[in-house]
Length: 462
Picture 1 (cartoon, helix red, strand yellow):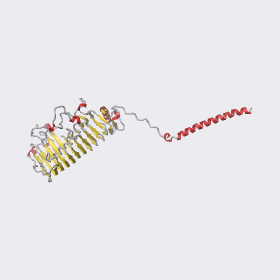
Picture 2 (picture 1 turned 90 degrees about the vertical axis):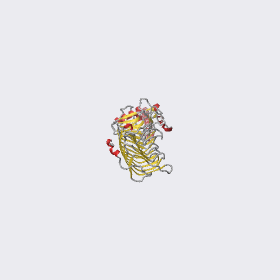
Picture 3 (picture 1 turned 120 degrees about the vertical axis):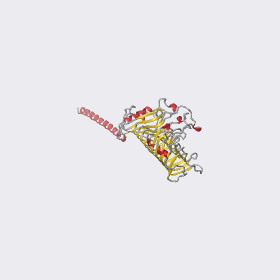
C-alpha cells in the first residue's frame, strides 16, 4: 500500500521538473537572440515616405518649394513639360507663403512651349533654375498656334527673382538661318519670308525683379527684354551666343526705370546691353562685353517716334572685339531727347567705333534726310582707354543737321590703334562740346558754345 502512494507522487514531481526545464530553455533562447543583435532592438522603425503630391493646380506646398517633378514634369529634354510648369507656377503664385520657390531641379532638362506666366501673386516668387530649360528646337518644331515673338513671358509680377546654377538654352541656331536673317555671306544678304523669332525671356509690366547667377545661351532673338518694368536688378549673369548670330542682344530695356546691371559677362551677335525709349535711372557696372555690338542707347526715334532717355551711367567695364564701344544711335525724323549720360572708366580692346554718336542711324540705303531728330545733350566721356580697330575712327560724333549734339564733355581719353602706328583723327559733324583734358587722339573738331538751333528746339517734351 505504501508503494502504491509513492508512485503517483513521483510521476507528478517528474512532470513538473520537465515543464520547468523546458520553460527555462525557451527563456534562455530568447535572451541569447535578443543580445546577439543589440543595434536592431534599439532602432525605431522608419516611417513610410509621404505620398507624392497630387498633380493639380490646387496643391499647396507648405514648405514653399514647388519642384516641377512633383507636378508631373519628366525632364528628359524631349517630353513637353509645359503643363507641369504652368501648374507649378499657379500653385506657387496662389500660395500664401512669404517666399515661394519654383524649382527646376539639377540634372534634368525641361522642354517648355511659349508660355505667359501671369501675376500678381500672393507672395514673392523665386524661379530657381538649377537644371536646364529649353524651347522647341527651331521654327519647324514650334507649334503654329504659339507666339513666335517670345518664349517665356512674366507679366504683371511684383517681386520675383530668377536665379540658379543651371542653364537656359534658347536653341536659336535654326532661327538664325531663316532666309530673312542677315546671312553670314557677303553684304548681309537676306531673302523674303517669315522672320519672327522669339525673345527668350521677357518681363512685361512688372516690378521689383532680380535676375542673378544664371547662364543663358543662344536665344533666337534678344536673350532678356524688360518692357514697362521698375526696379530691376541684374547681377552676375553669363550670356553667350555666336558673334554672327543676328539680333541676339544680351539685355534690352524699354520704358523701364531704376535698373542695375552689375558684374556680368555678355558675348553675342548684337548689343551686349541696349537701352530703348522711356528708360531712366540706369546703372551699368563691371560688364565684360564682347564679341558683339557694344553697349548702346537706341536705336531711338524710328518711324518718327518720340523717345526719352535720361540719367544713364555706364562705368567700370571692359569692351573687347566689338563693332562699337559705347554708342548712342537715333533715326532721323524722331523727337524727344537723350540727356544726362555718363560713360566712365571703360577699357577697350580692338573695338571698332569705341565712342560713337550716330544721329543718322539707318539699316538700309533708302533713309532720307529729315528736319527733326532726337536731341542728344549733356553726355560725359571720362577715362576711356584702350585700342581701336583701324577700320573706323576712334571717335565719331555724327549729329543731326537740324538738332546738333550739345554739351559733350571729354576727359582722360586715350585710344590707340590696335594695328600700326598711325593714329586716326576723330570725326565730328555738328557736335558741340568741351575737352576737360588733352585726349589721344586730339579732338579738334568739336564746336564751342550752344547753337541757336538748339536754343529754339523744344527739348522739354520729355
